[in-house]
Image (cartoon, rainbow, N blue to C red; front, side, top):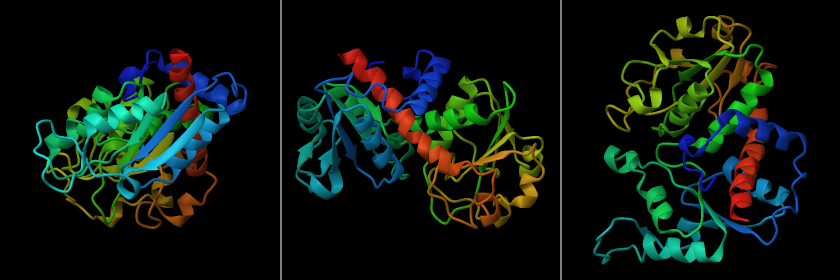
Length: 316
């Protein structure tokens, strides 16, 4: 693996999931096997799980790790080619990416969608510019349209708990007071379909994901019908793709609660966190034995560790 931007960088998904499960069993097995390597975790947006799990993953491998908040500790960056830089942006990504890449063996980046210009967000300007100008491998810690490490951790979680080879997995939209990107939903859809799970996506009309991400998933506008016989329920809010970045519904009836979970096949509940209690999901579901959210968060370490190991081994 030369970089990790999306599922397209994964040659063998089943093998990668197995590697993640093996790392989970023995997180320190490979510690010291990668010598004299350093990575930079670069954050343009806030983070808790992504920051700490990626840092923990690098430390488990014995890799030196530096965390840098671009907005708080660095110059504002310009990403547009041909920009006349007479405003408040002091450095262009061409120089910044090249310099950072000269200091480290791998750079991992988080940069959210701005939800203002669909074309700009879906062109992945920040990540694509870093990949273009950075001389070392780049790892996606969540970009405008994708969150592959989250999806990888989600699959590790599902593989741990599934009772049949192809479980029914339901990705359900849930209400939220803020407009959120489609990145988590996009990646979850791609990764679960690649894993050959039976995926249903349920949401109000107007919240359809971009076709390249929804793929061949079954789309169901009746949430209760979608929940029937499900083995896993994954709740997540996202803003509209068609009316880009807008909140089209605040229908509280889409919150996941005990009554809806009873429609399932004793399903496990999943969410990437952070989660708005009693808005996205009820306390009763989130605090129940069926909730896997804390295990998902823990699996973020092993997903990141497996990816870092594959890339840094390739670079050795």
